[in-house]
Image (cartoon, rainbow over all chains, first blue to last red; front, side):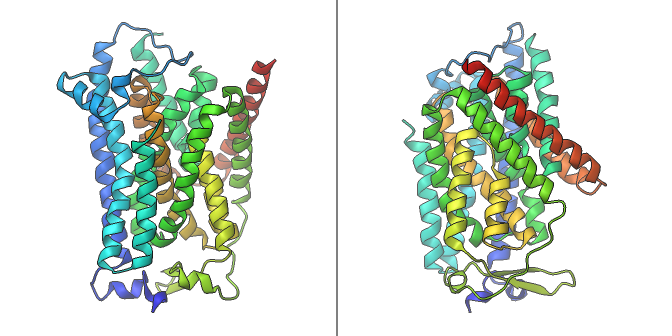
Length: 136
Length: 280
């Protein structure tokens, strides 16, 4: 029974299986990267225009300002059209893409009624959210 | 240097790093961080922050192509992601206590190791699975992949605790150095768990994105993701790796690959030497 899971054989029956799950997840990741890239290009071009005359220096480390480090700060910056905030929004979109993939896998395992992998997906999701929400 | 020149050079540098990463199978981050620190004099912490973001982009960008081939295993990936994400969180915390010079030296060592793995992969043949692993079925990690004549080939995984442990190490390196640690991931699956080569490389690609996402949030919150760097670098690495995956992999690359492996080796030595030199 177990061996048949995820096999190419079950694909022919047309019901929800691992292969279809992976196809949808691949598409999901592509959409995430594509939208992040568009936001990145828009933000980047605006950023270039705004900081045109400056000389970049990343030799010495100085932490980015608070407003560019948190979700709420980035949203705030979006309202004023801050180019750096638009770039950080693209970064947030990128980080969210693999997280969305794990959420999708979790839902798929729920549909398949695979308790073990629902649990495993939940653990991965919890670790991801911990990294994102409790950084200090 | 003006901003437009700096950004333009960064874009093409990152594009090259992405190409190299796709060509050697090592991923963009491994070449990107030394490029930023050695040639652009970017602080290694900024380089690692922006590299993590690029690693997520490459991994997700290549996903659709990998899925089409039908080799990846979502179950093996998810199971091992428990280890890699936990490791990534540990790595991101370690990054705050490890001195930047030590960081450079560790990075150099990983580069040299990765180069050697890439070198060996040229001649290693596929491993045949022997025996029967009970845990493989119990954890539902056994699977099939499309064989040459279209008949699905069955496979099982071995030494699950060993592979899981190595994946934790891979995750830690990823969170500490901002790389995908594809070389360690493939080693864990391919060598230790005896997962078929095609299955381990494609599954590793998916895992790299999830692993990097675990620590990228921490880097962002610490202010280590600089927008001025993220823009050219992320787009450059993504473009480079997509071009590399599409055109260069099919080309006759044996010679190119050897040359680039040497480049990675040289970058590793350079990072160790410059890291150690600053110490005195």
